[in-house]
Length: 64
Image 1 (cartoon, helix red, strand yellow):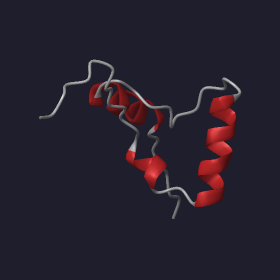
Image 2 (cartoon, one colour):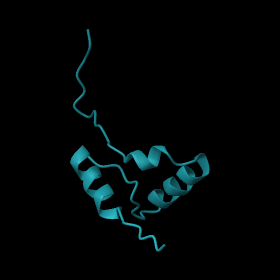
Image 3 (cartoon, helix red, strand yellow):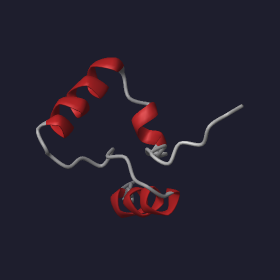
């Protein structure tokens, strides 16, 4: 019989975080352990993650 745990939580991270290399992920984890906020911080809802990703998007202009 499976027992329900009230303390079970889900954290959502941006897709960009999962595309980082091992050394970059370690750097992000060290910053987070020191309390420094990063764009890769986990969020409690997918909408919060999408909002952060939308904030950091930028455009590129090419001159020909």
